[in-house]
Image 1 (cartoon, rainbow, N blue to C red):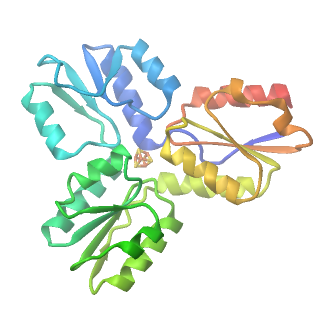
Image 2: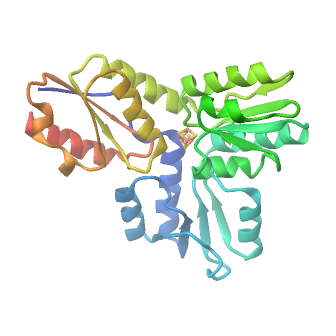
Image 3: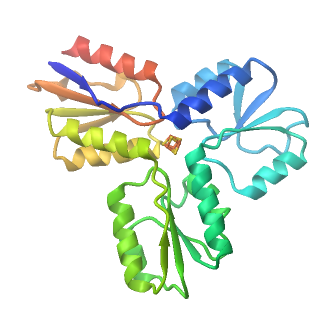
Length: 277
Ligand code: SF4
């Protein structure tokens, strides 16, 4: 059984930067992360062992402790409250997310109604919306637009992990509803590179394995893209989940991984596949 790893898979620039900084900070004092640093439970457990715990609320933390803002960013009011509490902020908002926040803010100031294309509950989307003004809306799918009304000019930004297909379809439909539409394509190139590489690989193999946290948006999107190719696709977090029967008769197996999947998890998956093969 031939096992092929996608050309682009695993940690992206923003996640790698956040992980490196967090591990370093964990050895230097009391450090907390506001929400899991990445959507990968195994890596979050390693971080905890390295001195970085996860908190969902910072109101009980003493002044002087460090608080990590993860790559998804946070709305500006949360940042302000944390600073006012005297916490030492380690802001690891990915520069690409910060750019989307900035575009949302400038669109709102210029009088556009801001549309954020993305998942409503995703922390990155929530962080962008925090900069987008009071009448901002989040749109997840093109069909939602049918029931919506827009008063004036519309400004659009995307969650960085959106697929181009969904984003462009939503932009096209908004174009029909608006006299003035301003669009910032804030989809991150790492996301597109991983999606493209996964699609190419899925077309060349018999079975696809997608590795990553079940709560990781970009991993979930890789799973959908691989399934759209028609190939049997399995989403796993750890090597123990791989079942030999998935590969019966398969000559070529493709492996890809979300941007929040650590290299050591991918290596363990490849090793287990070699054993099965
Ligand atoms: S996927 Fe892109 S935007 Fe998101 S953390 Fe990685 S580099 Fe940053």
